Image (cartoon, rainbow, N blue to C red):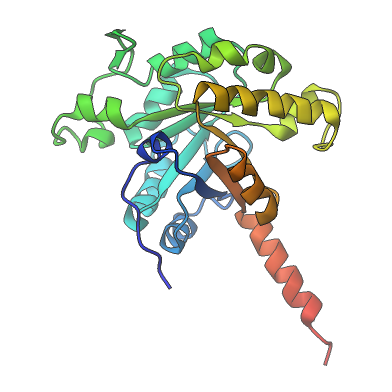
Length: 262
C-alpha cells in the first residue's frame, strides 16, 4: 500500500526535532527511488563518493530528482570532494540536501556552507545566480529567498582531526547536520571495521554528544531496527536503515534458504 507523502522539507523537519529514516540506493535507479518514496521513506541517500555516476553529470542527477519529486521523498546527496563549485552544481540541478565527505576543519566547512547561500551570516554568500532547474528555469517566484530557506548542507565526520575540531565545526553558521562516519572513523583510529572497538565508539560518542549539546542535528548508520530505535532515542535525527543491494541480498538469500529442494 502506498504511504502518504510528506511535503515538508528535511530541513524543516530537522528544525522541528523530527527523526527521519532513509535508505541508500546503490542501484542509482530512478525506478527504485520512486518506489522508496511511495513506500514512505523520508529520504533516499545517493552516494556519489564510492560509486555511481559522476556527481558532475547533471542529467543523471536530474533523473533521480524527478523520481524523488514524483513520489514525495527527498534525495540526500553526498558528493566526494569539498569543492564549492560541485555543491553549487548539485543545488542548481534541484538537489535540496547535500553533504560533503572528508572535512577536517571549521574553515573548510564554512567555505562549503557559504557556497550554498545567496546571503550568509550577515554578508553576501557565494551561491551563483543563474536560471537553472532549481529556479524552474527562471520561473520560480522569490527564488533567492526560498533557496536560502530550503537548502540543507551537512558534512561527514570521519577523521580524528574532524573529531578534534568538532566544537568549532558545529559553530559554523547554517551547518544543517553532521553525519558520523563510523567505518572511516574505525580506519582513522587504527581498527578498520571494528565498530565495537572502544576507540571507535569514543570517537562516535564525542561527535554525537557535542552535536546534541549544541543543537546541531546528527546522523548515522543504523544496523538493524533495534539499533535504529536506540539511536533515535539517543538524539540521532537522521538514520540510514540499509541499502538497496543489502536488502536484495537478504531477501533472495532467505528465499533460497527456504527452498526444500523438491
